[in-house]
Length: 296
Image (cartoon, rainbow, N blue to C red):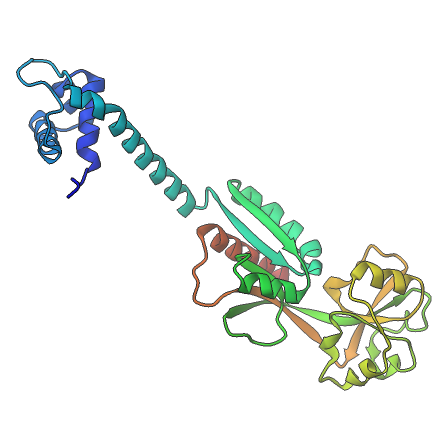
């Protein structure tokens, strides 16, 4: 059976070597000399060999002690390094968090959130992925990321969803479109206009405006392509406000008042799985920043 090596006796041995004797080691470790001698004696008993020459009057290592010294130093250093790393991880000084977000959140909300996070937690590595809601959901479920920020269409086993904010749906069209000056809009006013469906169009399903989808013959999933179509005046679309690219000067976002539709944006995590300290810090930071933004 292997002897169990406790760290404190190893520290005593190293202190005796470094300080030049038992008395100096006791003073350095703030312990009595008999306590140091007892710790070394118990260690020698466990190992079955003497570490220091007996009766020499000096702290002189035996050949076995000389063999043990570098290995004791390595073991103590490894323990101390591991302890420091674990403490740093637990106190959010180091670590890594992987987070996925839908493009509208990644481009509109995450820059502000991450700018403050890296100031508060400079030692934490961050990996941000963006993709549609289905990709974000899949990455969280497969544990490819710690957290997701997305809209959840329906509850799903294995995922916890914490609501963060409501994102109102509106109509997007070119600035010279007949609807551009109508604010707010009733869904009936959209009839007769070419509707370009996109990945968020499912928000209309089950609402009084759902019939608009059945008459739409255009579907564009990519936001860059959708924007190009809108700027070319091919038609109109519906988008949550966060997904609307405000820098596009030729496009207008018009509130859809009837029906009032909103998508819920929230945090996704795996059910029953604890977050790492870094991911927990990110979760709390996201919630605090968005709560602060809503209260202003």
